[in-house]
Amino acid sequence: MSIDLNCDMGESFGPWPMGNDAALMQHITSANIACGFHAGDPIIMQKTVRLALEHGVAIGAHPGYPDLQGFGRRNMQLSPDEVYAAVLYQIGALQAIARAEGAPLHHVKPHGALYNAAAKDRALADAIARAVRAAGADLLLYGLSGSALIAAGEAAGLHTCSEVFADRTYQSDGSLTPRTQPGALIEDTGKAVEQALEMVRRQRVKSLDGQWVPLQADTICLHGDGPHAVEFAQALFAVFKREGIEVKVKM
Image 1 (cartoon, rainbow, N blue to C red):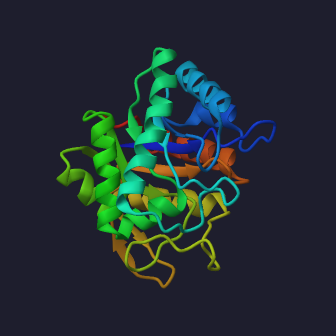
Image 2: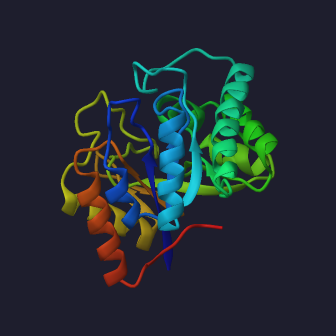
């Protein structure tokens, strides 16, 4: 039994820091690096790529809506063609930086509102999958387990990685509880670890209304901007090791 542990990273901007990427890198296997649209900038991208290389962590692009002020968490009415171009642009930017550092790009995971929209909107999901395919047919596409994005990636001939969340709660349809609703975030380390183990061992999660929801857990996400991110990462890594669950990147 194995699981990939990924984290959204590189979300600082200029002199404004966000998250503790250096501490988190020691406990994850893949990093989703912001590409400048919702967070990050060229120098931050370069530093985060170097940090991932130093720790042997797989490098992924984390493209979002062009929404720095809203951190990419606000819905935007972009057409599929606009989403395709925006995602391809962001992948290309990180791809170039990674190549200059001698590192391959491993995967792509959309961010925030774009991720949530593509989980349900097949047209947007297809646009993202096309962009990933155009950037490199060997790239993995990370998406919410059971979502339209996973289906679109498979239809495009991509290798997909079904993602689950340790620090977010779920609705009975398998979607994430919107951040605007109470109980959307899990802030207790014990609860996050308990949910993660259930997802990995039994491929299911209990929704906020108490229903068991089946899912496929290839990779678990932690949000690097969360106040308990380092604590969660340390706890998850230690518990998986104790339980004989290998933490490794999906190839």
